Image (cartoon, rainbow, N blue to C red; front, side):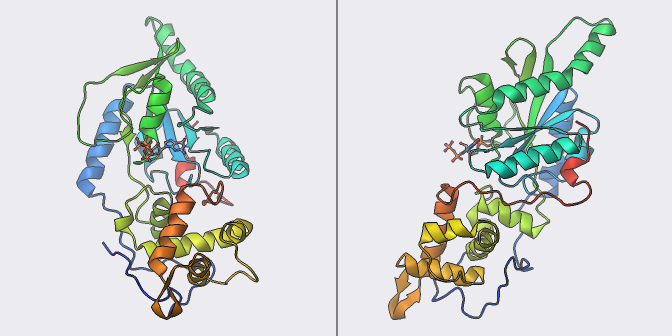
Length: 320
Ligand code: G4P
């Protein structure tokens, strides 16, 4: 648990190229094997009860917010990807991500669980995907029944918010309490669809350091877990690469943009008057400004994961 210290300049003694490789000393997010096994077992138990899985991803980081074993866990269960927090993501890139998933044979919808955008479309997709299964059930002599679905996703991706939104009322809290068992309850969504009120909580691909840092950008993991300076510098490098005009505008940067994330942080600190004695930049303060403003959407809608150029990904090799 390394916390950043106040120091003169983040740029001192550091060589950072654009999109520098992540240092190897980054601590990993702690999800112990026991927790992972338990989470997987709970999900597998509930999977038996449903026709369709809603895989909830963060639209800003559709790859980094995916569980690495999802396809293996859900096997041939139909799934629809819901790209949540679309209000915070780059709309053009979200459209490209939706198209990408569809090109992989996976149903996908952009959603804003906070405001309900895309939720109707999501329900339609789920119902459609479930139909072959409910029809098969009737053909086999069963009584017509509602389709059943559940939501799966990593912590903080918006599972509870989506459940609340689908339920139409705040009947579940917007905070996870892992380990607290509740009786299984179904939420009726319209005529033909029931939603399991307990979401499946899965772990992210935390063995990948870059993924961990992106989760930190979005606030999905506690800031104490990562070196905030490292997180901020990488964020600035990605923003410099993909959204340079926004950085210039937000922080009123003039002249040529500094070449590295560390230098950018210093320039931002100077612009915002984060100075300590001797005219050095208070990096700590500058970091907090960058992260707080980024997370508050002050740098605009941003997507930090790029669509894979070739081949399938972990999240995109299942059926849709
Ligand atoms: P989880 O069950 O998957 O752990 O996530 P949860 O619903 O608790 O949501 C995590 C945070 O993400 C919450 O913010 C929630 O409001 C926010 N959120 C969920 N969906 C969306 C969305 O589509 N757009 C935006 N902008 N935010 C979303 P919080 O700050 O932790 O809590 P609070 O401010 O809602 O109290």
